[in-house]
Image 1: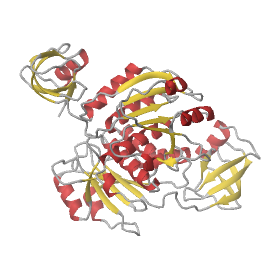
Image 2: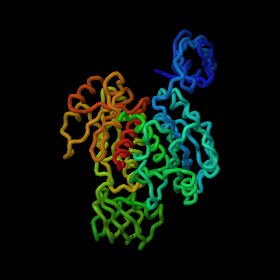
Image 3: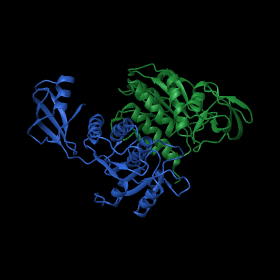
Image 4: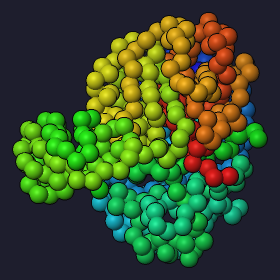
Length: 243
Length: 243
């Protein structure tokens, strides 16, 4: 199955795919008028559509059947907040993999030890979109632009529930709980992952004061993007458990 | 801490680092005669050394103190057997990440639906070595050259214990257990991950006949390398649990 994306699609109506999706459907996959395809709105709905105009810059489709919005397979939401790596391709890789495995929101954090404080979120959003389609997810994750960790910690949480609030720092002499011990099926989580030089002492203290729980990600010294993906895999594994 | 590698190092003796390690120590990090560094033999031992000759092609060190061989932080062994991806850089990425997170042996599998049946194991071994040093592991994982899945399934298991034998296939209409439900702390595991087009029916049947248990990796459609890393993260997460 090949999945397309259009945020504007509605049941039993016409919809014009954007230039990128039109090019993919018509020029790359050579779909023609009358052929059928699947489109998601990125908000949990799946539309079964037929092509009315196979225009490679503005492909017009008609939705003939729809399902949803469907609940996510695991109802719990994961918000990953991570300091951008010095090498931007490592972040791009992280976004692709995290979206494939399953993440709902991603925030870029500027930390005391950050070596990079800017990354184009448009490019990351594009990678997220492509990974969503690849992995057949119907939910497009939100990617928030870079914000200072301190500012972000003081802003109110947008989630209606009270999620697990976790900070994965590397200070082995401070008490930390293994991530596997704190994650629970069905529980939303926010996980903070620091930059190459770790969070500063002040950042860790502030996060703990604000109710974040310190966790460890095992005995290895992990790169930032590896640590972040490890947390995403852990969250999804625990939520996939039936025990 | 910066970790170097030499398979030949022994306690209280001289050792010449190879050209790559010598270049890194002397030319990149500019270490000089009399300075100290850490070297692992890749078999669980860590040597505290002093530089006797800061030659950037054949750096001579003297081991002044050693620890080990140390047991792995988690005693369980993971053997990942995975079909190479069409795009070799995705495999290189997998090796880097899997070694960082923790894997003991990696076998490349030629499957019925493989689009690639050859990959230079020397290059992957080099990436594994670099990831071992980066993550401060003292065990260098073994990377086995590509072998046909059928042949490999019929060869005897080299491990002394009887590991969990798991095959992660994508046939959602066949019974599969979530990976989280079958992994157990302290239990060795062999995990089979198929190519882009999944294992063939015959391969799945054969693996099941030979005692492999079918597992699922969650509701997402994962790329081969993502599925493999998900399994590696899951294994390490479960072994890091203290519950």
